[in-house]
Image (tube, rainbow, N blue to C red; front, side, top):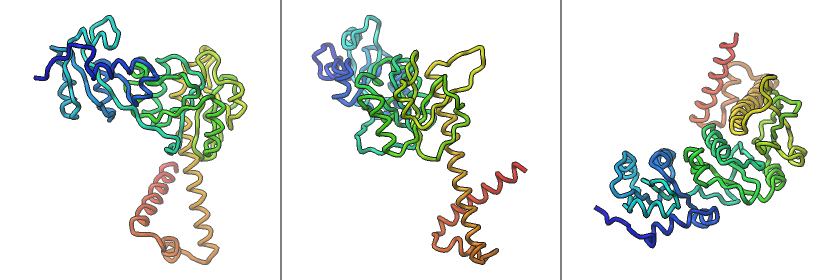
Length: 318
């Protein structure tokens, strides 16, 4: 049985206290999780926990999960844990989790969510949770103050923040210009836009979705830099949606349109290749042999599988 920590001078509790501020979390590259539920979500999300602290006498299933994940668990007096995180209510579990490392040279994925002055921690957490759930890893903050590692954001995201690549720029303009330079197609949301997002003509490039402040929306100077300004069609009974809900709808619909744009390009390329073969005088089996020459067996199998799926989809629509 490990010794019970009884003093705030303990090194582990000093680390916990340092994570009370955004600056402290940034310097340590870690954040604080409070409660068995959030710790469980973090472990299940694949986060790396440096250590956990349990209140003396606490019994909870998370203990066995931490043991399986080989996370060091220390025991402390409950009153000391409460003092360490400056809470008046009881505290049973704390854990220190590492933040995903993000350097400027780390490549982006094919979709990014850009936060233009979104302020509410609940909305921030909901946006991150939804984006990560829909396969988006890059979350872009556009000011020095937005904090996605606070306790409230972590709670609202159900630890999804720990799976995201958090990017930061000084201003929204800096973010949009840099993403443009990286080849992103910028899509900004506005309730006043004429184009429904379901009709936006995406090119097939990576997409950066800009979502705005709960009251003012995306700033006008950011809208002016966007490739597309879109809206979610609404019925007359409701004027707008919560920014967290709206972001989820937009990410889902835009990613679907990206897939369709990519498929359209693929079909066009295949059609062009078939046309080239016909123009060269190849038909039937000779055309197939000519088309597949130079490919490995694995590449041939993958291409034939793609063609089979395309044929099935076409037959399904007949």
